[in-house]
Amino acid sequence: MRSDKWTAWPVQESLTHLGMPRGRTGLDLVLMAALSAWALFGAYVSGDFSGAAGVIPPLALLCCVAALFAYHHTTLDNRLLPSLALLAGIAAMGWGASVAGGLVPSTVLWITTALSAMERLPLASGLGAGLLALAFVVIGFDYAPGSWLTVGAVLLGGFSLRLDAQARGAGFRLLAQERTAREAEARSAALAERARIAREIHDVLAHSLSAQLVHLEAARLQIERGPEGPFRDQILERVVSARGMAREGLAETRQALSALRGEIAPVEDYLRELAGADGTESEVRGERQQLTAEISQTVRRVAQEALTNARKHAPGAKVRMLLAYEPSGVTLEVRDAGTQRDSGELGSSGSGYGLLGMRERAELLGGTLEAGPEGDGFVVRLRVPV
Image (cartoon, rainbow, N blue to C red; front, top):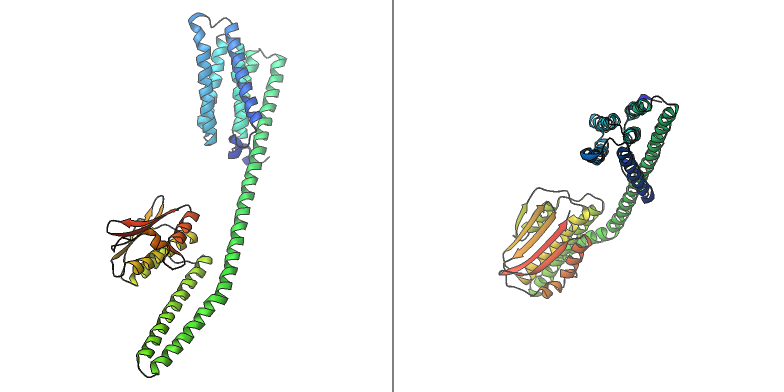
């Protein structure tokens, strides 16, 4: 057996009750109660705890239970010296009971000390503490042959408890590793699917929009070379507007492709750029947090839609956009100082998205979206947990 096997603590899972059947837990409680009752009965039968001394056994039992509870936590933290000190305290109480004439309670305490040491301490320390506690049993019974059998049985029982706990802990550790591997595999599959979708969108939509931009630019140049007149100006205005929409659509498509590939730029940079396009005030508060692609895209789309509705329903009004990083999540607020409007008008703005789409995006991420009149203007407020 390697030296580290003697000095290593049992795995953390084996030191907890994780995965232990309820029947086994109940059996342990019944056994502990039976041993406690046996110890108390033996103490009173000995006749050395009569009168005022009758309160000593139950007080000692409470102290032992408290020590075992503390021992459970010190072993969970892998603190060897405090654990040994607690076991030494329990063994000392057993020695005190033996001196007072209570051989049964002292034996119960020494056996409990040995079992606890063998089950939860590093093997070398547990074996040493267990043998020391059981040496008191041999001395207490005047080196009777039966006492040596007790020593062997207790050591074997403690080691069996240790092996059982380690097997249970190892099983749960393997289960956790398998779960982690499956989650990693699922994430890898999701990223591969996103990459495939991104390629399809790029090959179809991005190429199509790029081609439209080329043709619209060619059409604009041809129209500008033509004879001046009201008809030419109207056609030129339409072509320029269509070219602008195609350029915006291409930019948004590229952003969506970046999000699918996990290469999305910081959301605050996008919001500043979006706000600067039409003179909107932009502010970022709080310490920047790393947002997932889904949250980042939701913030971008809600900001875009809220600004579009503000320009549509409150043209010329002052608009202010605030992005706040908070401990519980991220908040986006878009507020205009225009005339109050009904929230139903916002939802039917004709953009194909509207209030309903923004709210659905927020709810999919466990967040909320509020939109309605506030003060002299209209506010759209998105809250998403991070």
